[in-house]
Amino acid sequence: MPHAEDAEPADRGDLRSRYKSVLTRGNSTDRTVFFSDAVFAIAMTLLVLDLEVPDDLPADRLGAALVEQLPNFFSFALSFAVIGSAWLNHHRKFSVIVRYDFRLQVLNLVLLFFVALLPLPTAVLSEYGGRSSPWPVVVYATVVACVYTMLNLVWAYAWRARLMAPAVDRGLYLYVLRAVLPVPVVFAASIPVAFPAPGIAMYLWLLIIPANVVVHRMFPTPRARPREGRTSAA
Image: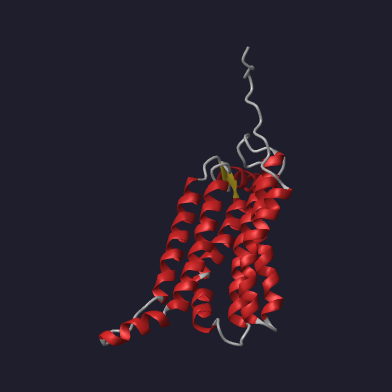
């Protein structure tokens, strides 16, 4: 007759298996989406804290004080657009990512780490971005590239782990994957340029617009699959 201690390793293995199958995966991503939305909203709100006008200004100094805030405003607007675009992208992805597991949640948390971090390089960029040091541009471009790289990693893992709705076929999966590529590629490409020419590196970010056009022309929107059971009109 086997001893109780002989059965313990098997019991532990069974518990681990049950733990993974019951507690680390599920068929609803609502809590993941709600938590992610809160992080995006807080990060966007923190951006505005860098905008301020000194108190007790004489009336004739107000215009000059507002002009001095323009670099801060441009950095705020840029980061607001970056986070807003990332949130839209995240929202669309999780409209078809309908299940979760532990690895997906970890990847999503890494994404949210970089989103929550973005107000810091935004403040550095607004304060020191127009000077000779490359580091404001390098740090900002690195964080933005990481945000969009993680968006694609979340999407790619969800596809491989079969966590998506049946409506997403391979063509649609690849189209969404490629659509995000211009942002991390352009920001990452600006990093080596920032060391000899920080100002030029910032202007390189505008290449995202033509890069998006090129990607959409090279990989056009896949045609929608016909619905099952639908017949053509007589």
